[in-house]
Length: 223
Image 1 (cartoon, one colour):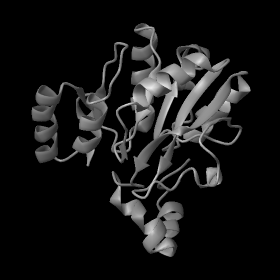
Image 2: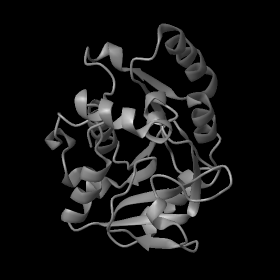
Image 3: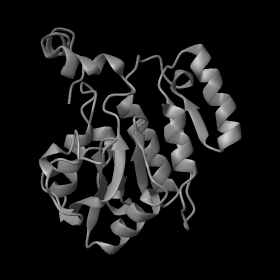
Image 4: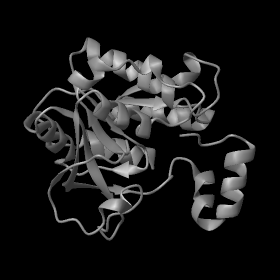
């Protein structure tokens, strides 16, 4: 599934320079070898977090901190595409253009859809909206979101709470709190296969009692 995501990103029609990095968050030895082989074939950069930390997965905070520093040093925006998402050929360029054209953009996000092109989790609140660009005061997900350079320079991710696992809500609220505007593009749909990268979270739909028991007794999935 991750390789499908990677191939979709690398097949994007983009007229601006970009670097695509996959952060390998303690995959198995076999899968790490596959990623190393495919990075040479497909052309993405690979960062094995096992070379940088002994902290167990998930290491979303570390990934965000590394990526933010790299983006600022390169004077670039940061596009986050999670590994259970498939972009279209025009998604990357569309978000870049959209973020550049919309006033005072902090975050530009693609709406997520299922295989039948129906808006799905985590953007169920946007169901029924016509194709367009919406100023969004609710939280944005980082399934496929572009964080602008201006916003990245305004808020240091080292300030994020290390006791949490996920930071989409916090960061999207920080963008609004700093006077930026967040935009949701229902014109730029991406196929989201929810929690495809973390199968245990499928329990949220198949066995919600067990999911919430694990979430609260073991401190998993803190947002």
